[in-house]
Length: 135
Image 1 (cartoon, one colour):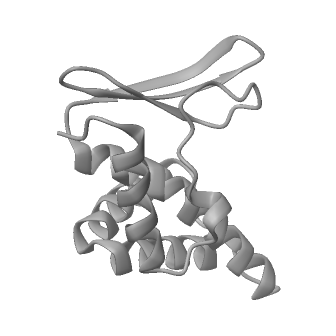
Image 2 (image 1 turned 45 degrees about the vertical axis):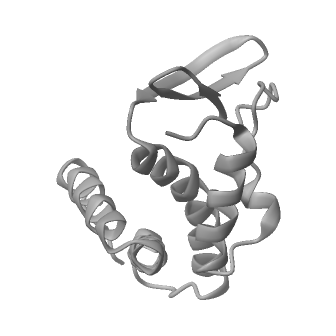
């Protein structure tokens, strides 16, 4: 069990280095930044990943799994990297999510194969209710 933010930050940096993630995307916050950026609370036997803005809690996810916490943290950084990639490689006549989802899954898979599988499941759920729309 990770007992300090310093330990957690070190793990996040090591995993982020596998995909050359920009260091600012890998900063683990420990207090609310009031802009919605998530922060981590370490409890005796669990972790919370919390987002709040101007004193209003947007979401709180809790887990006893270090791997799940690391996935949440790294997925946020990877999302931003995937958006940047899509913007730089936009294909004019297809749903922009195609390239974004592809890069998101690819980058997570470079960190941990299991994380790519988790992302695929989440994306499949999204596409059930909001399928691709290509022009």
